[in-house]
Length: 311
Image 1 (cartoon, rainbow, N blue to C red):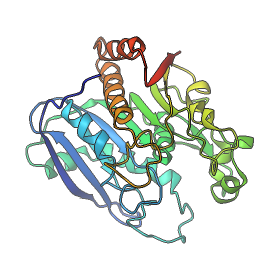
Image 2 (spheres, rainbow, N blue to C red):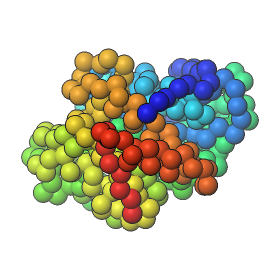
Image 3 (cartoon, helix red, strand yellow):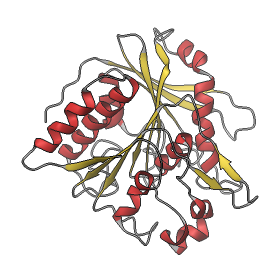
């Protein structure tokens, strides 16, 4: 595999969007190529973890930089669950703010005019008909909701449906799987909304990326295959990329040389960069051969970093 940047990057943060009723205004990092028009949009939802700043608009530089140099505009909010905000536990959705996270993304799409106006030279350059969502770990849960997955709100017993029709493709990176008896007692006690996770209405096309060593023992009793549930339990066109030897950090996608990565592997990160950008190119531009070529190249390697299956 070989990878090369194709354009310099402009990154502006924070772009502050006032949201009445939200605990704090929504802060967004906007990263775009310096040149180019009709830029497809990727909404990127951060995970959690113990680092202070990766779970915010300041994380995931390895993915953001690659996607932008390959022609995407990346919009990444700081969700209310971020440690950078330190909001405490008084909010009924604390600590993970599962609904608010998805509503952040919907709010960003509602206010693209403001975002374009806040970034010098961006006006009129975003392609609002080509929108994808990506998320890692808890961010994968957020992305799955926007793609059509649902859960039942424990406090009210009502089903939460946050499917966003403006989003036409997704990438779920080490995302949570189903609830019920698949999750640990710790999850059931502390994050009960996970118990009712339901992928049966997640119809939007998506690439599910899972590590075959991602045990996530604090979350699931099932082992690494739990992270593939969004592929197996959802209808419609889906693709599963299983990365060999990958743990929850998928080689280090949340930041450069970060301490919480347990499977540091630049080659693995490069594969995630390459394959996710190729997948989104082909999904957002039907007929683009990028994904077929990338999948064929992975399969042809003598010592491949992973395997791909589709349905």
